[in-house]
Image (cartoon, rainbow, N blue to C red; front, top):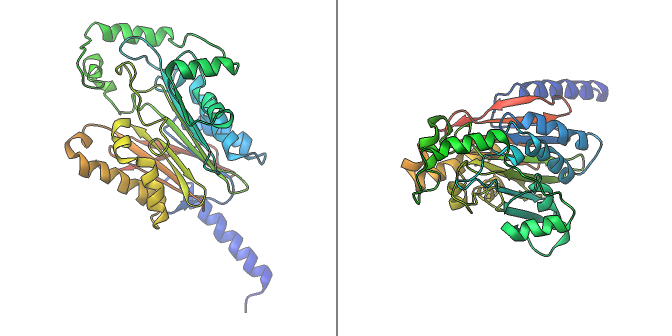
Length: 337
């Protein structure tokens, strides 16, 4: 008969071994971590996660963590798909979209916001200080300025140079982002250089879930275009009973499937986070098989138990994981193609 002390030691050793296996970056179906955790899309999520972790490790709320985390990406001038370093639309305007959602179902969003470097923080103000969920365009800017946000020119010299290069071969055709093809084949919609989003999900020490999503959108998009990132249920969804999900890539396809909501509902049915993300990706393929082969969409999910996973259309998608054991893990996401 095993005594209590031996049982506890055995359980601790097994738990430690499990944590090591989970942190190897295999992207397995049942990755999970006890305690606080934050996950986010793409390699720049590593730095963003560290900022979120600074909140979580002190016992802070997951909502504060995700806001602090994605603000790092919004401030990174080398990141051309998020925040103030983002490439402009076809008319030279840098327009930003973001949303945020907490464990109680509260949410806020802004879309087509100009001149404000941190749209995620404006989105939180919308959530906390208005009866609305989303403000857009000039109204969002007016609200931000009234709340004390600084107005600035977001078009960086590097982004302006890229835009001027694109202008040499511009084609004003009513096909979203067709101009990228003449700009450079390396920056087609949804690939690793034009994936347009950081989505972040966190669970704090109290088990509360929150998420945030922020972007500058597809480079050289039509003026006024808004993708999935600021749309609750598409780019982000949080249900504290079940889990949370976020999306990245070509937002039009995510919107058509209400992707993040779909992932959470699949987890409600018993799917693991990875399997839920895979089914959401397959839903896109079934609806538009030819389109799906030419673009990138990825989903990332975290359930209430701390299990996480992701799946994408194309190879090349990665996501960052941060917890008490390791703060710099980058996982290669699985994909269909």
